[in-house]
Image 1 (tube, rainbow, N blue to C red):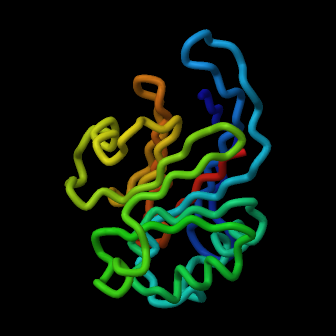
Image 2 (cartoon, rainbow, N blue to C red):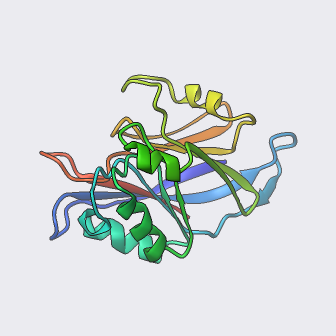
Length: 188
């Protein structure tokens, strides 16, 4: 898969917020290199919101979720109200638990989700085993079979790179803090 950065937004009236949007160029057959499809589904990715209620999630993130075909939260919600609000707001949602989520959230949400969108296998996880510094390809150990894309949370930093044919994406932190914006990624 190849993705191209097409937009980066700055400040909004409601506080620091960054959106990184990727335009899906093509899905390539790994064996012959031929283009299989062009993805048209709009996927909003965010994680590490650390909120107690859906209403505490940044308003621009909630607006993006409402416009998405699929909304993905890559863990560290803190309370189930965030997952329930996401499910109500989104056309389709995927949510995994993170290392900061309490036992009741962990019992309700999976650690890993795998979805297929237009022939693209997308793995979603929130590694509880790594510190802030680990190579993204270590995430492959969470999956029986390597997906085309791995969406993950935990490190509160944006990552978007392709390694060994797998596209790794961390949307960063889903809340604004001192001099650091809330961040999301949009895949189209």
